[in-house]
Length: 173
Image 1 (cartoon, one colour):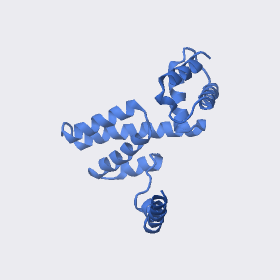
Image 2 (cartoon, one colour):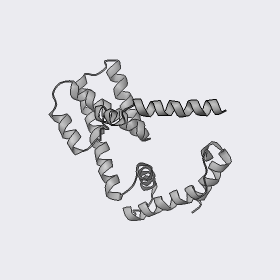
Image 3 (cartoon, one colour):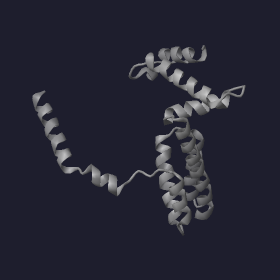
């Protein structure tokens, strides 16, 4: 056990000494799909703009579980790989997705919600039968998250009975 611990410490030290995190951040910056990014993409010429847009949107999709966007991006990538449409046509579709992502980012910021809270907000808003103020929905989202977090533990979602209990907690209120 001690040899393994010693090896682990030495491996961590080696990793810390040899990997320059700042260089990685500089060489591979996180791309935020915002007004500036969209303006820059629109000003580019040729197929490069499609690839830049595709890279940014695919990275966004990895982080977010919006199935609608994921399906659209997957379809565009498939059509691109199969050469069913030309790059300009696919670029227009990808640009509309990026503009939608940017609109959602702005709304999320205005509401002061993180990504998880925003997805719940959209879900609640789409299922409401009566018109509700966004502030009321945000309050409900935060209450739901607080209720769920107070009754969960690591790996809770792997136990069907616990998932059912949380499901009931949320829907019965």
